[in-house]
Structures are given as C-alpha cells and as structure tokens.
Image 1: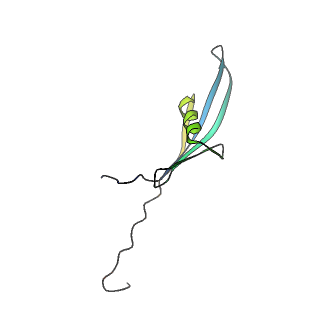
Image 2: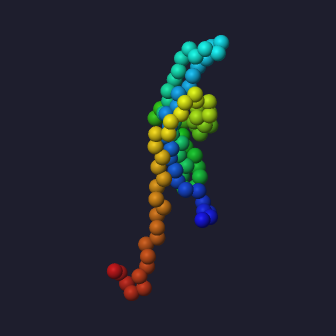
Image 3: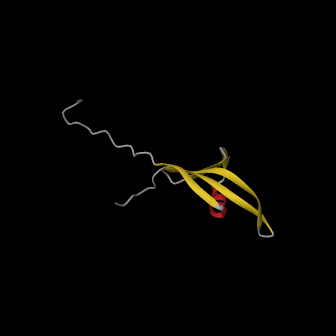
Length: 89
C-alpha cells in the first residue's frame, strides 16, 4: 500500500540520562518526551509536559542511557461517508 501523505502519530517515552564525571555516573535525570506528527508531517514536541523543539526531544532520545516507550497513538483515518444514489438511508 502506497501512502500519498504521512499518517498522524504520537509517541511518548520515558528517558533516563546518565551524567558522568571522570567516567563515573554522578547523577541521573528522567524526562517524559512526546513527539507528534500531524497528517501533514509537521512535528511538535513536549518535554516533561512543556512545549519543546523536536530537535531537543530527538537529542534526549538519542543520548539517553535508557528509554522506554510509554504510549503510541495512531488515530484512525477518517473515511468518506458513502453517498446513496437513492437518497438518505
């Protein structure tokens, strides 16, 4: 099946980042990262429930020591209402 436009999707992860000093982990931070793409393919992001840039969200996901996918939402496409040639059903 070939799609002519992207599908809407939203994914949310929990990411843990390890902060090191002299190769010893001295602190970890945990964030909730959400990336969404609308039907036109435009990206939006949230980090810890606050608006963020998709670049920052991507950086947190790529550099995380651990990441866990919490949820993924793909809304169903809206189907056209069939037209009945004999009038209203």
